[in-house]
Amino acid sequence: MPSRRVLVVDDDPDARLMFRLILESGGYLVDEAKDGVAAMILIRDLPPDLVVTDMVMPRMDGPELISRIRADEKIAGVSILAVTGHPEARERAAGADALLSKPFDRAQLLALVDRLTGAGLRLRVRPGFALRRCPEPPPGPGCPSRRRPPAPAAACRRRRSRA
Image 1 (cartoon, rainbow, N blue to C red):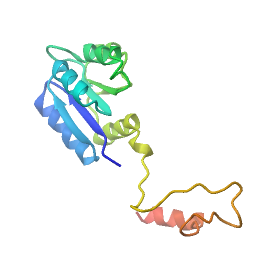
Image 2: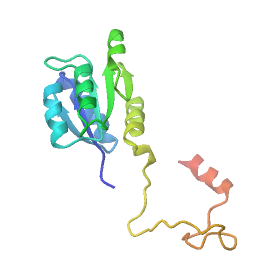
Image 3: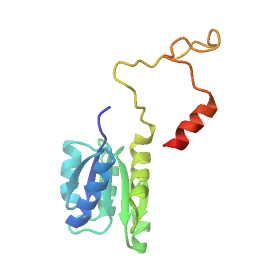
Image 4: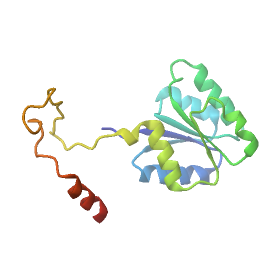
């Protein structure tokens, strides 16, 4: 499955770098824009799976970017994560799918990004392995399409506790 694409929009280059490092460590492809104007150009050329935008920026700020994305029917379905350190900007984040307050930690950011991109629902399947549905009801004690019988629940708990 191809990696999910995230567009980070922030006027602070250090913030963009921090977002890039965290998101790339989570397996995401990251594009950057320094403001909403540059972001709209990138979004129209290659719509990302998620836009992570700061709320306070020059030229076109976060709320204006969010409203323009939502108004354009070709890109209105793009998920948006608004990021702010200003309590008064929270109300202005209407239209975003989620809001993340600064400061935040890596796990918090990745959990939100996974949820918004659907990456938490990804299945990791070996190449050449086909998933097939069992007929209802499964014949005999198990589904014939499984490669090996399922492990007892106790064995699964032991394996998880070792990791």
